[in-house]
Structures are given as C-alpha cells and as structure tokens.
Image (cartoon, rainbow, N blue to C red):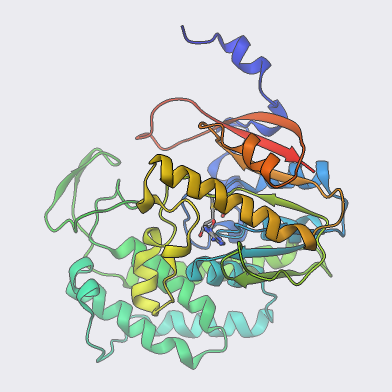
Length: 368
Ligand SMILES: C[S@@+](CC[C@H](N)C(=O)[O-])C[C@H]1O[C@@H](n2cnc3c(N)ncnc32)[C@H](O)[C@@H]1O
C-alpha cells in the first residue's frame, strides 16, 4: 500500500525539500548555475543549507565529484573556499568558467564583439559527427564560431557558449535533448510543445542568445560572490589524484552505478572542442551496467575515493554525501572507508520533467 502523505512527510527533512512553488526553476538555475545544462546536478539551495549546517564560513570544502560545479559556485557565494575534482574535461572547463574572476570591461567588450561576428563561417571540414548531428547551415555557423575562439582572451567562456549552442542546435527532438540516439531529420510530433516541430536548421540564433546570456550571468554572479573566497578545479581521477590542499570537509553528490554517462551527455562538446575523453575512468559508468560485478567495482571505487581524500581532510571533518542509495551500498562503503555514519536525512526531490514518473527521494548521509 502506498504510504500516506503524513507518513511520507514525517520521514523527510522539510528544510531540504522544496516544491516548484517554493523554489521555481529560475531560482534553481540562478546566475552561473545555468551557463550550460547538466544532467544530475544537485540544487544550489541544498548546497547552501548543507554548507551552513556542517561548515563555518571561511572553511575549505572539497567536492571530489564536482560535476558542473554547484558546490564550488555556492561556496563562493556563501563565503567558503572550495576545491572540485572531476574526471570529465568538459565539466572542468565549465567549473573553471563559472568560478573564475573576470575583468568586467574586458569580458563585456569581448562577448559583445563576438556577438556581432556570429554568422561568420569557416573553411574547416566538418567531422563525421558534425555532419550527422547538425544541419549543414548550423554546422557552418558552429565551425565559424569555433574559428573565432582563439582570438579572444576569454576563449574558455566562448567554448562554453559554443557547447551550449551546439547542444540546442543538434538535430534532436525537443523532448529528448538529454539522451538522443538517432538524429531527427523529419518534422515530428513534439510531446513537449504538443504540436508538430521541425529539427533545427541553424545555430546562429543560439550562439547570439547564449553569448549575451552568458555575459549577463557572469556579471550577476560577480555581484554576489564573496570577496576573498577562492575555488580551484582539478581535472583527474579522484581515486588516484594527489589532493594538494587541507580541507575542512567534503560535500558531494557521487555518480550512481549504471545511471548517467557523464562524458556521453556532452558528446557534442568533446567533438567540437577536441577535449580529452577519459570515460573509462568514470566510477559507476553507465556503460558498465548494474551487474553484481559492476556494483562491486562501484563500491570499491567510492571507497578508494574516500581513502584517497582522507589524508587531506582535517580530523573529524564532516563527509556529506547526497545520493539516492536505493541499493543500500553506502553503509558498507562508509564502514570500509573507516567512517562512522552520524545522520541519514531524507529529502523529497521535485522533478519537474513531465516524462519522468513517480516520486523521487534522496538521502543526505553525514559521516565523520
Ligand atoms: C552526480 S555528478 C556530480 C554533480 C554535481 N554535484 C553538480 O551539481 O554538478 C558525478 C560526477 O562525478 C564525476 N566522476 C565520475 N567518476 C569520477 C572519477 N573517477 N574521478 C573524478 N570524478 C568522477 C562525473 O564526471 C560526474 O561529473
């Protein structure tokens, strides 16, 4: 029998659960949190509360699976230092662009100059991937933008704009931007817009819109970030990477086995920007599946991460892990890593996306 709403709510930490009305998408994707979409991130307001509960301002937070950098950005807003590690090159690029400090005049001038040049084309031959996933005009515009990038000081910002525009300009249906399998070449019935839609033909409109949107978001974040707080990004396999700092605790949402392929979801960025693909090093890689051997390899991987981070963490530091541990892997993982589970909080996750059914809950595990 389904639990009653009262029984469900009694188990929840309500301060960590928000409805769409309490926390609309606009707030969850404020300033640089939406420089580029990212599947599987946690929301900044959750990070804000957890930082406030388990850390003191000025402390240094480690996120070993930093993804799109939610922990880092929120740490900078709330007056903490932060270090984020990720094995996926695009995620590191994105985090770096989100957390860097910019000279407001130079960035404004550069992005406006690039905005006026969108539509310039290049003689670069499109790769097989580009020919398959983009209409010919969209490909010409994307490659034309790519050819401009190295002329500018803020080339990495432009790389993120290019990736975001490429994501929108792929020949996919509007409702399947996350996991498209085949290019969509014909008009189709769109579940999202409830009408017939057509695959995208051009990319210039996205390049223009995202260039200005990125500028506005970087400026907005520069107004709210705490002065003196710093973030660093490390690109590597956090099971083995030497962690250079001294951290006051960990706040992270790890990958979960067989769920999301963190390289494949940004394939267009790897293809267009020539980024280093290290997907075989992902812990719990989706391609490895959910076999017993894959789950065991996942648990070993997370134990290795915790053991590798241990010498860099202050004694008694809080280890705060946000995860939907439906296979109950974490009690044993924490024990094997020599940690004591102190709290297990539940939160209700508001999933707005219409095509995913059912209620969804997440745990916040606090260990030391
Ligand atoms: C659930 S996501 C983190 C999302 C993040 N909390 C955010 O808000 O954007 C997990 C991340 O772990 C990274 N990852 C997987 N295996 C890794 C490894 N061996 N070393 C470092 N990062 C890894 C993935 O690339 C992915 O970005």
